[in-house]
Image (cartoon, rainbow, N blue to C red; front, side):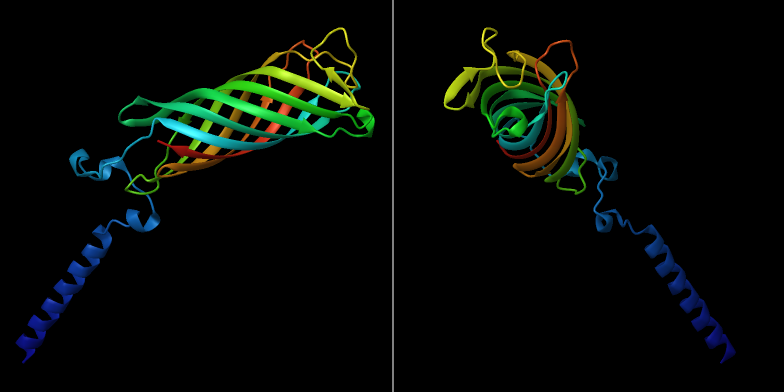
Length: 229
């Protein structure tokens, strides 16, 4: 009887040891929503396509700051654009994207600017570097912080006051901002994109580089939605 009890105790102890070891060896990375390439051989990874083209729309509440005592202007801006995305290395999720953007900006002004209204049409070339982090094994979901620079060209800049329209880039005509606007500026931007397969949404902040020109400096916060193909 004692021998039987002893054998049963050994069997129970062995079973508990195996169960504890199995629990210890279990990989909980899937439960945490994390996936690492080195977890599995490359030939067993699910197929995934990195899209190379993106069409997007953007909304930006912006501030235009002037040199001297001229009060700032608040603009509401909408834009559409195209970007080409290039992966730097096949096994590294580092990307460079460049494209072109068309932006329309409008401001109703304020008392400091005699309630003049402003309309701008601009074209911008942004270039960004981003790094994608994939929280899932399928890589259909990604987070991508990015930083970059842009060149902005003003195609149209008009001020309308008491029925009179003035070209803000005409050096021979005065306007309520007190400065002549430059047709080109250079700036930078940084932000975060969330990718869900072909779709992306993002937020960013950007501003012009400081220089000696009298043209207003743009400070903008942006929200973007895009489609990739």
